[in-house]
Amino acid sequence: MIPALRHDFNTRFRPETFRTLLHSLDAIARTHVAFPVAETPCFFPSSMLDEMARIGIDLTLQLLNDPAYLARSLAAIPEPWRAADQNAHPHFLTADFGLVREDSGRLAPRLVEMQAFPSVFGFQWAASEAYRSAFALDPSLRYLLGGIDEAQFWKLLARTIVAGHDPATVVLIDVDPAHQKTLPDFHITADRLGIRIVDIAALEILDSAPDSPHHLPRLGYRANGRLIPIRRIYNRTIVDELVRRRIPLQFDYRQPFDVEWAGHPNWYFHVSKFSIPFFDHPAVPPAVFLDDWFRSSPGSPKESPRDRLPSTRDRLILKPLYSFAGQGILFAPTDDQLAAIPPAQRHHYLLQERVTFEPVIDTPFGPTQAEIRILYVWPDQGNLTPLISLVRLGRGQMMGVDHNRGQSWVGASAAFSPS
Image (cartoon, helix red, strand yellow):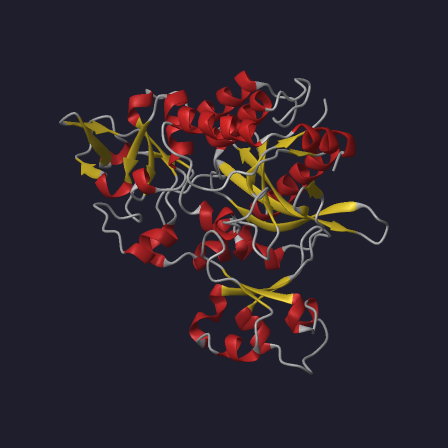
């Protein structure tokens, strides 16, 4: 992306330096980082990252300022997971972009996906610092967005996650967190903020306290034989995983509790793949719900859902709405594959125009694609703020770290920009 920086890094790269980086990440994470980490950081113009960050904000506000959309997306949440006490806005957002070459020759971002859900803030900070240290990068290169520094980064994260509570009463929850591939991020975040990591299945219902509004019950967790009331939950639980693994919980999402959510569960659904058909933006490839696509057969009136998509099947991609890490995606789906989805389930799938991303990272193994994720926080009584980006490098159809194993110079990376 920035030829002089790219050439300098490739020339200076040494495998032993990369091994040092990996050892340092394992040390700060207090566990082995099991997912692939790329041998290289990436160098992007700050104007490009700023453009992506603005697009993510614009698209999110478009949804939140549309009461009809919010009502429709709320109704689309599976009823057992429609959580009580939804707050006014998401606390976290991720927006994933690939880069395309426009007719003018300009590299431009195209949205891959958005999700109102936290990502690996802590790990990405650590990875960026590890790249800088191990490879002796120019200290003027920046990896934080919006001109913030490291102290402001952690202050904003603490404001969003802990929100002034005693950290002992704030928990990071996930399904069996000790065995999640994101455990390195959990450890780094918990160590920096002083919060606890708790399995969601271990949360217990407590009696209401005298100061509880409307005498609502509380949730708590056990530590050293004591039952500790929870004031705020940093929610890292993917509902898909609860359903897929049939995890029994001791509480019901639909029941009100005297607890604050940092990342209310409903926002995972509100701002998600479900949102994409509602956007009309040059950075968003068009998409339609599969049931709408079936209803608008060839010969339908103009401006039918099918008219939004290419007629050539190899330019389409099928995505399940509620899946994570690329599960269930089909490229160039056939008629038989589409028809095999039961009619009652088709509203849970998207057909979207498939975009060919430009391989922009020059590596010893050839040009490599980069998917750039912008990570935002939105603290209470604050603004939607981009904090940091992460990059996933790949040379296949899928960009996730699970889809590029066994290759070199691919996987999780970091983005640096000149000041």
